Image 1 (spheres, rainbow over the protein chains, first blue to last red):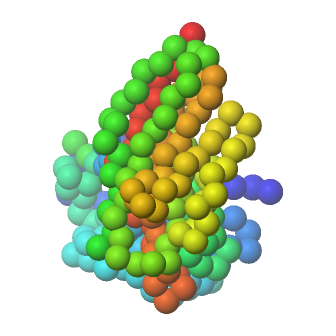
Image 2 (cartoon, chains in turn blue, brown):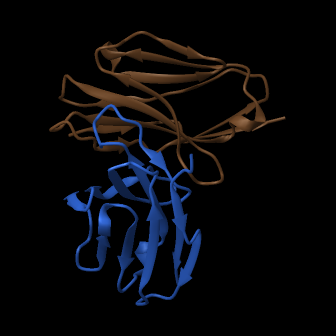
Length: 115
Length: 116
């Protein structure tokens, strides 16, 4: 069974440029998560999707970040315009139904560097 | 509010030594779940174990063991006879059962370096 797929693995951009990250969750997983992991920190949830619906986006900086999960499968996270402080690893995860006891499966992440 | 504290930023051991990674959590909920994840250099977080708040039995899986103590709000992780392949960052995480949906709160992680 294929795991969570993310692309690109690495991205270097200049500040004020836009950037997008793509995630394909494990087949059949209804719940998809985007996390941001700053250097030396644990992942922090940005947004959670149940199928196509964003059910928890309270931590997403909505002035510059946007996300979508069309058709309830793969998802795209966008930053426009990027700032220096956005440099981090962006992790995508998925779980079957998003219930408390379920395991979240993580992708390898996209490492973003904003210059 | 939920909080997970991993006070050990980095631990260095020599292969075959035993090592314990500490995890202390805070929550007002009576029902919650605790997790340990491993993050190797490749970047993805790998699930190791899940424990619910009503199950205080310790667990052993090969060289790994976990000690859950509600009285001290701790969920410590021990690796016996460590190996170089155990080198990674280990995260402890907590989730409340809020409307049945999961919201993981991670600690800051402990980097384990195992040298040959």
